[in-house]
Image 1: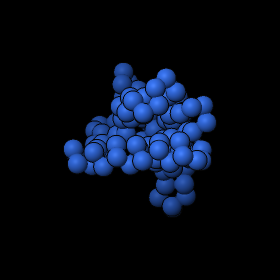
Image 2 (image 1 turned 90 degrees about the horizontal axis):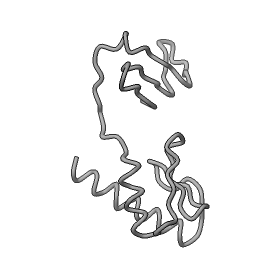
Image 3 (image 1 turned 45 degrees about the vertical axis):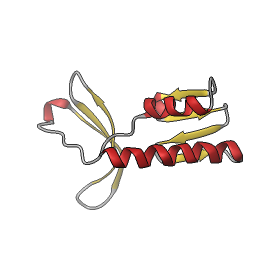
Image 4 (image 1 turned 60 degrees about the vertical axis):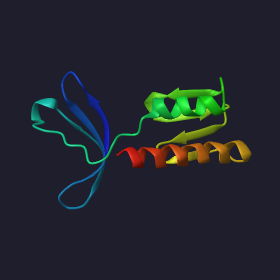
Length: 110
């Protein structure tokens, strides 16, 4: 799974990569000099757009933590590209519904 790209050097950071024997490597860094082409198989998750959507429902209660790929709502609900990963109750359920709606719209536009 692609974790990051340095746009200047085209160096890549990959996570959960399997080698020829099937052993998993937690992180793999590839120098941009070794990269010939990069092809995307799926549209990347737009954390900022999703945060803006959440901000409409939870004004002034949404923070983006870019380095973790997480949005924090009301300082207690954590949501990532996979949905709510931490938090319970009606507010967390509302965040999950907003996430599901966002993902449906994303699939329709792809």
